[in-house]
Image (tube, rainbow, N blue to C red; front, side, top):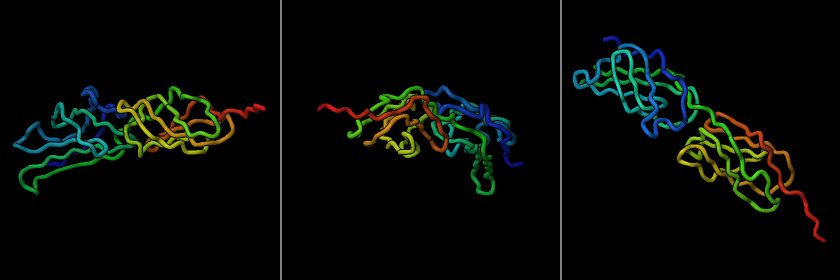
Length: 193
């Protein structure tokens, strides 16, 4: 039989939350995927290396719940495995799906004392849930991420001691960047005597 071939993924982009509530379906389109449950074959679809929970399978399309993730240009894969190694067929198509880029809605607080290390809270969307893939900057200084919400919309980071004002606040998630319109400043000196 001819091997499977992927031609498109629709939609081609979506939330980093994926289908946390089994509500976000993508369709992988192509040919030669085989009929659903064909002769006891094991059929598997994946986006970005994570298996999709299949809703519908046909020879020309697979609808599935996409897993949560981050980043852009993720591959889509279709694999059909049968009882003999010579009968297995699979295909991976590069750059078929992109998780939405992060957006920053608000930052709090926008000022802090110069001496103490404090927590900065950024709210928005599409932050993902993996702290290792999140980088936050206050100006050119890294603000170390300490937590991210399971809903992918709040990240907290630890701002170090410093001085100055009008620092931009930026965030990068798995190579996709966003910046805030808000500016951060350290409190001005206060002479008391």
